[in-house]
Amino acid sequence: MYNIVSRLLPPELISRIDNLELLAMQIVEGFITGLHTSPFHGFSVEFSEHRPYMRGDDLRHVDWKILARKERYFIKQYEEETNLRCQILLDISHSMAFKSGSNSSKLDYARVLAAALSYILLKQRDAVGMFLFSNRIHKRYPAKSLGNYFYHLAAELQKTEAQSETHIGGVLHDIADRIHRRSLVILISDLLDDPQTILQGIRHLKHNQHEIIVLNINDPLEITMDMKGQYLFKDMEQTALKIKTDTKYIRREYEAAVREHFDFLGGKLREMDVSYVSLKTSEPVEKALVHYMLSRRKMY
Image (cartoon, rainbow, N blue to C red; front, side):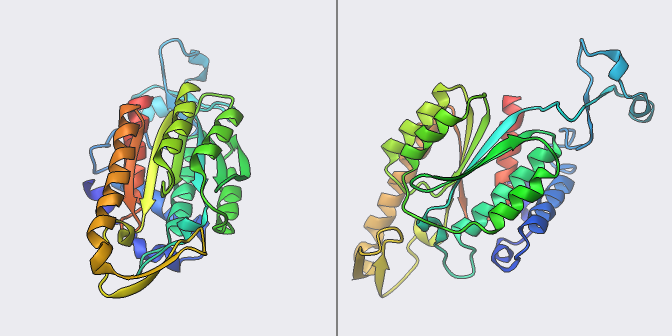
């Protein structure tokens, strides 16, 4: 996935850096630098108070200084102007707290990703809102396009902890009823829930004319059971459910079931024209930003 991703922040550092605001900014600024030597060269990442001139724009708003310097027409963009509205839906259920080895937890990874996306969107003068959810909506932050809104969102994400069981599908219906303006909706979740209810919730959002990106985050150990010997397995959301067994008896069936679950979800989402991206916590966050750029360029 391009050189943009390969040389940036090692993902294992995510869990060691406690300033989410600075971490997100570091990731995005490095990502932007990488764009200039990537297939995105020429894509607008000049986060200024301007946008390219379009036929029909009022010539009184042309910035003549930029024209002299770049030989291209740019329009002064005012604070109330917004390219798009984005709603980030962040799963904070107990299963998101899982981590293995030196990897960050899924929630830490997701918080950094949500903060980085917020930063890059607000730099582009887009309006960003956010929902934190598990089996219900815990917090909602309205969509705003003010640049300093990033610091508020980052501070809120910094103190967010995993809580409650997952009920993605039901919550998506609730969120769909609360987003009244057409938006880009970015769902960040491990998608460990009934696939049919998830798909029903996504269909509700699609029916409301939203564009959707699903960022599916999992720990590598959840995908391939790279373990030997006996272990006590505990459900992270239903604490009473525990099973003690040797991995050699369940590994093949477990990995097949996990693969079937995500292959089914990914296939159905793509059929619905939803951008689906599978991410492991061992992978750089920048991988998701590349997919965001691809989706944005396709949609707008």
